[in-house]
Length: 164
Image (cartoon, rainbow, N blue to C red):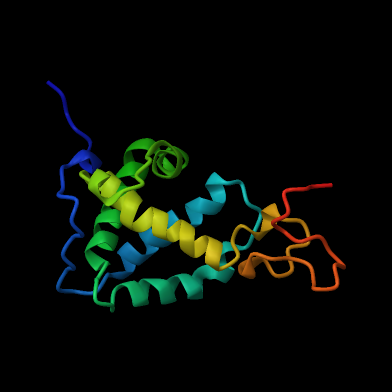
């Protein structure tokens, strides 16, 4: 007798319908823990709390557009909660951000792959856009613009390929 994990439940690749109600505080807290897991996974020494307001703005925008992601957020919260309950937080972060690779919407055929493609990947993009990975670049003064230094070459540009 085999038991399947709750995150392995099958879903169609299409974006999930949004719930009638807005996301509740517990779901938002779970999604925030999932977002914070990015810094844990990449071993970043940053104050993630400083990114929270921009992250909340992204959630609001993604739930108010022509395509409403609230169904995906509700699913991701449920999946992440189940992962943490069964595997522990460290293993849940690893399963979501390292082990599960989904690069095309057609690959999102389970609850977990939906959470990865529509939410976790989006959270990573938000993390980049808000400067969460700036710790990888020494003296990243203009990190969110993906260029460092100045026009007077006082500092090396970020994207040069040459490192000293």
